[in-house]
Length: 259
Image (tube, rainbow, N blue to C red; front, side, top):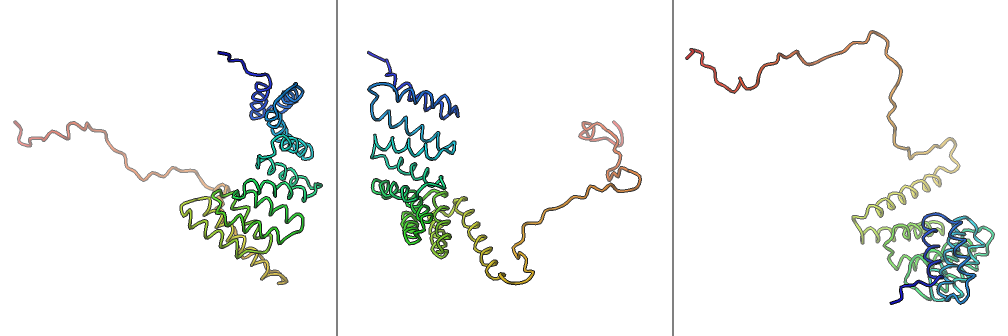
């Protein structure tokens, strides 16, 4: 029985481990060494580019991340998540063309049309591209998929609010709370949404009013004064001095007449 592991497999696993541990420089060196090896399978090359893309994205090098994600997609074009990563690298780069990210998300949605996070990502990039109609359709489609993750639902709510659809955001939140009535994250998201709506309504109502301050006040904080009190320091005791007595003797009945 041969237990040897191919070199490219060892380098890939080691590189992924180093990346997970936060040793980005060592991980990049190993993965680049892997890509220089002859006859490396396409799947291993794709995974190496994916990890390198993640490292570049974490470092804020979005253009380099897009190159690695594009290389990974070229070797394994049927992994929908990699299109999402490419779109995220487009979204994170203020100089990137959002249409490239939208094209990648269309491919991801074709592969996995029932994943709500792909639709929310498409909605965000559509807002950036100035296409509000496409953005609303994307957020509506994502809401109809009933996402279970609070983070995805928060993106839907933010998208509805950004596109002027607060009523749809409210309906999506009410439906989500009905499906998960005991979810603390949903309740917190609902409270935050109501607070934001009140703030927005207050801003619209108070716009132009002279000297109109915030009507929604923060919770008061108790302030303890540290000013020393003048006068002599005394110790006040409410208890009385007690005399020690054995407890066992109290349990023995005493004969008043003697024995």
